Amino acid sequence: MINLKPEVVAQLERVLSSVEMLLPRMAKPLDWSVCYAANWRRHSFSGYLEPVKVTDTTTLDELLGVEEQKETMISNTRQFLAGLPANNALLWGSRGSGKSALIRALLNRYHSDGLRIIQIEKEDLIYLSEIFNAVEDQPYRFILLCDDLTFEVGELGYKMLKSALDGSVYSPPENVLIYVTSNRRHLLPEYESDHIGGKFVKGELQQSEAMEEKVSLSDRFGLWVAFYAFSQDRYLDAVRLAIAREARELKVDIPFTRDVEREAIQWSHDKSKRCGRTAYQFSKNFVGRYLLPAAQP
Image: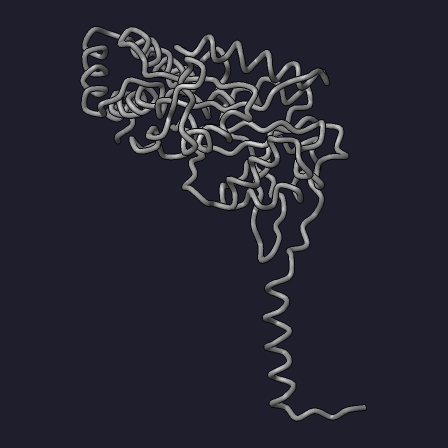
């Protein structure tokens, strides 16, 4: 038996403690029968799937002004759930217009049919193969969601996602689709100089090499689903629906008057945006103020 000096023992304990912190966390396998969504959590050189309690109750019927987008995504998701061919999808466009809400509503509608969602941050796209390995043998259909995604030129996650979409060794198993939301159509910033270098070939304008590279990722998504700012009428419909939803949850009656309509329009002017998010934020503010006097002692 080797007798070590106390200071050597203390030093070894510190080393072992440091090494232990670097080891992957021992996480229990998720019970996907009761867990509808999870986040990928990075830890040291790897990561694990962390269950998420779904609290968003948004339904597809509550999303206004995006009827065509809903139809496209519902059809694609139902194809996927049925084991039929379906496409990876890029939902892009105006901020606050319902891109993320649509995917949450799809989960609320179809979780009973086996739909599950795994959300991953841009920085963790390097772990795609580990996530795929964790779910490929599960009897569920998974949407891998990367929300509000944008890249800068040269980022590693860009190359990993591009490889996964391209069907390389990083391609997802048959029970995984990739849905991405972004404010940028091509996921990368575009500059005026990117268009320099285009040329005509047999009478057709060919993009510059810079633009060819910038569209090479977005082009790998089978679906491009565009979202735009609301018209004023659509915005007011969304406000009316949002207030009605708040009133229903609180079991109160809140009339939608011309004064409320004018206030909602002014709110959108102050926010410089007509979209579902602005309507939702106004409804929270208005309903709270409307009910506050009765709630005070």
